Amino acid sequence: MVSRVLGFVKTAVLAAAIGQTASRAADSFALANQLPNNIYALIAGGLLSAVLVPQIVRAATHDDDGGQRFINKVVTLGTMVFAVVGLLGTLLAPVLVRIYAQQANSSGQGGYTSDSLALATAFAYWCLPQIFFYAMYSLLSEVLNARQVFGPFTWAPVINNVVAIAGLVVFMVAFGGAGENSLVDVWTPGRITLLAGTATLGVLAQAGFLLLFWRRAGLTYRPDFRWRGVGLGATGKAAGWLFGMVLVTQLAGLVQSRVASEGSGTGASNAVLANAWLLFMLPHGIVAVSIATAYFTRMSGHASRGDLRSVRVDLSQSLRTIGMFMVFATVAMCVVAYPFASFFESTFRGAGQMAQVIVGFMPGLVLFSVLFVVQRVFYALHDQRTPFFMQLVQSGIFVVGTLVASAVVPDDRIAVAIAVTTSIAGSAQTVVALVLVKRRLGGIDGRWVLRRYVQYAFFSLLSGVVGLLVVTGLGGFVAEGFAHSSRIAGLATVVVAAAVMALVYFGLLALIRLPELDELLRPVLRRLAPLAGKLRRR
Image (cartoon, rainbow, N blue to C red; front, side, top):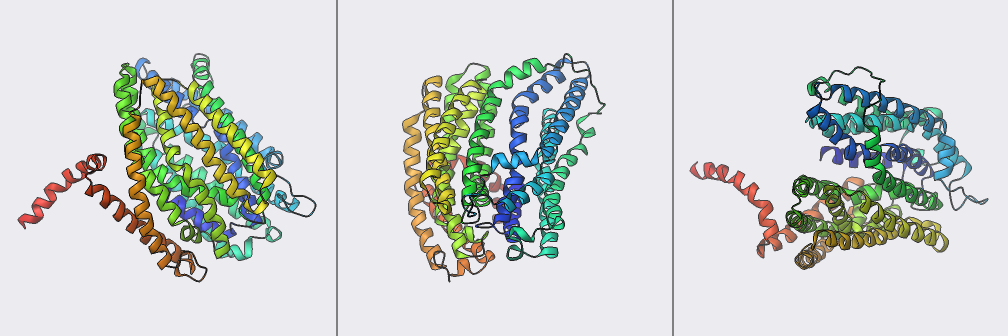
């Protein structure tokens, strides 16, 4: 939670430092800073947690040294592989930038100009070493998690965000804000080094922080280059479908990056898409991921015993619980999109362009969270093959839709088109996933779940009407309104409107005695009961 809040703050400070909408410098940095994440996802993303942890646990159980030799071999091999990939990625910075960016035409429209590409390449030389540090963070995290040391994994991203925010503050003190830094031709080596260098320093600190807890996990690392017998053959087979899914996703991401580049300098482009996606992921990450992770453990236990009925019950409960929050979040985010965007943008026009991208993403939020849960059902059943084909559906629809948008949508509207296409493709993927999981489990309590979602939608829309009145009253839809008078005013408008909507929504759910809400509140009320009794006695 702390990490997500700080990540939100970091994004806002970055927008204040170098701009966002129609800022070629911001688009150049967004492209360069995304490259290490893309490469890391290909070499390690998702594979380590899905495959490595079970192997470490197995080694800890069966090896006479508690898995120490196995861990030494894996960490040594991982360090070597990640270092080589990180070095190659950095050396190939110009090539990677050209692959992910669409170059502008002779009039400077429809993509990155030559100067923008040069700036993105300069940023990339500083950012691409993050490949090594991201991969090492993931590897070390999974080793610690497998040894039942969970705290460092949670707090390491906080260190990253603190370092990055500090670097941005120093940057703004030295070089000013977006008004001085949005143009490409003002970027000196000092500016580039401070901005991109501190971004990489934050990722380094994130990985290095985990080393402090190595001994707490009962580990003493010694390099071990004897990799025969480490079990990588079995690991590779288990990870094959997951890697295929990541590869398909990254290919779709490459298409998105190139098409989004067409809006650079004229409207919303890569920087706006990245930040709007961050806002989209905020409710999903805070609520859906937490709930789904808890249910995943239970479903895995049921699946290991062949108890599909209990898996089905857990799926139904998790979908109904997550839906209670996600349906409301969808409506609420659409209502506060304009003032929320003003927290990142200094102009009403820029806020409007970002708000439209946010709203374009939002129709897919509920089904995106549903998909996250359904995927965990297949993983609990040790089925990585089905999620791969589900991803093929999403990526295929997305790529076709994005290319069509590139051909027919004006450059300054391309980011909105990409957001809408993302919602359509993700929704189609989720429908396919629900059909497949229903066949696998023999049912998913579909009518019950659908009935709840209709109730959530009805009460969310009622709260949304109230929220619209609040946002309108605070000037959220006019350039001269309080909500757009400053970044803080925009955030204050969001907080007030969201609080009012939440009060109305959950108040209505409590009024009808919704079982899912009662189930969530019961543990809280149980803990508060003794405190209430003490207060009454006083």
